[in-house]
Image (tube, rainbow over all chains, first blue to last red; front, side, top):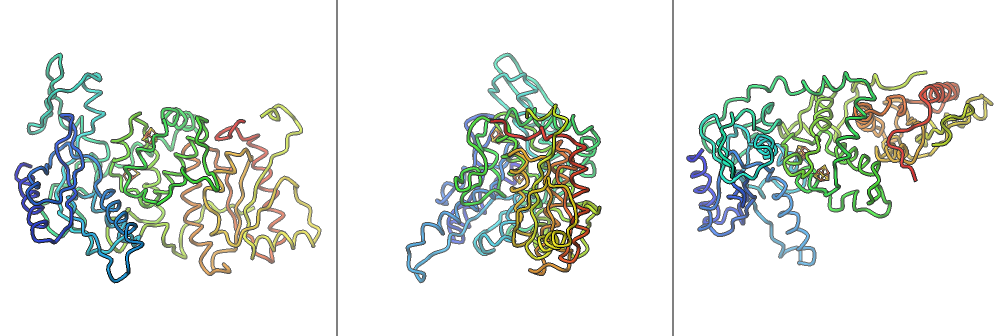
Length: 336
Length: 144
Ligand code: SF4
Ligand code: SF4
């Protein structure tokens, strides 16, 4: 991994120095030992700040969209012939490149506006799982040694097997290597062991009685404080004005009514149908630990089973709600 | 939901129908003097593809007991493919709502063409029966 980190830094430096990218989006050391933060490098001499490790969690595609989009907006009053394009370099693992693919398919920017530094990925560590493992105590030191994570808290140390702290979406990931890239760093990572079991929890949940499902849904959504961090972190949630902020019509109330939260969640998740890449960014940033994945993965499962699509798996397979087929299944249609 | 215990409870159902087929089908049912339950309020839209999934979820939140969406049969859409795009959305939406725990029969999708006045009456009967069997909507309903 150190080697990968070095190469990421070198490539970033080179891209900036040669003027091939205006900014490099990557991860840097965070303020907490178990976290990294997204960073934006514009000076080649700063490339040394970039890191690549198991704590690189959020999906950086979000920022690529943000930067390009903001720049475009800022040029609205510039004469067309004087407008410039932002070129963004981005450190991307498998799920990040899937999100970039979706942006490209949805014509958010051109392929030449992103330079993808592809990195192989073997999964990131979910902060919540560390927290649970140390009973919520403050982590003062944290490092990965081979297959285990050693965590130090004020009251002592602990070694946790890596498997127990990897994010759920990583454990069953099918796309841990970049789908598209301009430079590829390191060797392709081996596939994740549990990819075939990705829908296990979903099948189980589907078979519960309807009341139990509703009880679980309301319990989980009851935790949500509507901070919208999930939306803000999601690369597929890029609308200029999100429905939660619209006032004409006012789709969801802004109060504390529980049905407003449920409707918000149902609709936000539904808006990612066929577009959610299971990157886990929303889960990672949620301060309340809402089990969004249980529901997002259902959309993912149906998407695959009904339309044989996996979001962003290649440039040719468009998000399933952007296309249709005459032979789509329609068992759900009511015939009296 | 004070209506709950009431034996004379009648469901409120919202139907989003397309202008070109189902609405015309409803017209035909009307001029043919076919009888069907009066529980359904029709909302006419240009196409079933115009039905934003949000309309359905919002209707449920506002307290309707059931939502019906009906458009032209696939292949007969006035806008060629509106209903086929809609079909994908609805397939996912119906599954998703039922997955989170809303009874599947609260959201019903069907196709009724302009010449199917009788089918329209049958659909309304069927939907009303299904929703009646479920009783008043409790889930997702905003209580004021
Ligand atoms: S919904 Fe969550 S897991 Fe899916 S793409 Fe958005 S942030 Fe990633
Ligand atoms: S991040 Fe979590 S608490 Fe915040 S709005 Fe999303 S689900 Fe709710």
